[in-house]
Length: 408
Image: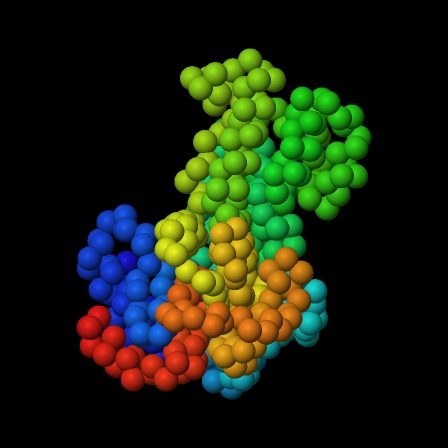
């Protein structure tokens, strides 16, 4: 896989050594057990896979190259480059301005853009409507487009099944940049509707089976369906694609549910289900799958608590928190600074995005066993800072060099 040139401030020598050793030992990526960092009174178990993915490193490399190549020009990002506060802050410090917030609210009006301005498309991609608007201002977007290749893969798959006469059901968070972009691209080819979760999928299925009157669809899914969507016709042949950072198991469950509805309603079987339902399992992101599988493997280890590091508005990170919380006391933080002391930690509720302080979060025992992972947009350097902060409470920082030497 391509190696990207990203700033050293995001790298960690220790974690790079750990990841390299694990890759050498497990080239086929079949071992999802965590890596033990034994500091004596505190034991850290690092997930097998975590941190920057291909798409994020690609986006960061392009963004920093863009800054170096366009000194003196105004540089804009359509929205956050990735969902990580440190990376976006670094770009802002270098003069990059944000045109929209993460939900599409305008910060700098498009009318203020000039032909010689540089506009960078974030890793999530953007809508066809915004692409056309920028082209109308003679702004080159292709050169500074950091859209993740795996997001583009979803768009391409949508176009392929659209050519075969299927409508598209997008499993994603309706307000998320990637979902908005995927909806735009898919709906340019075929009728498209967005579902957020299984609950909404079950309700959508009732329009397929005509259990619910068609007119209710337009209220229930307002703002989620494409122009001229005809619920009486456009749900007769469907395929499911997803926002790439969703829980893979959730997308698979949604696709399986709709497939079974089609089979039962139309009297089909596995041999002829393709008459009504397209196979789109290949739209799941490899990094999302790997990171989620690594968390599942990590949770097989007996531990006292888990810490998940990443941006609070990061979808893929939130899902890692969700998985951990099913099994273990979990703290979601976006930097080592949130670990206030060995007594207090400031952490985020992944559902409400609200922070709160928990007291006495570290158990009064030794060794304390902590599971750690991070989202696909979180720099390894931040994870190392979290580890250093924790082991510092136990006067065990001297072991860091020993561990680095071991993994080299």
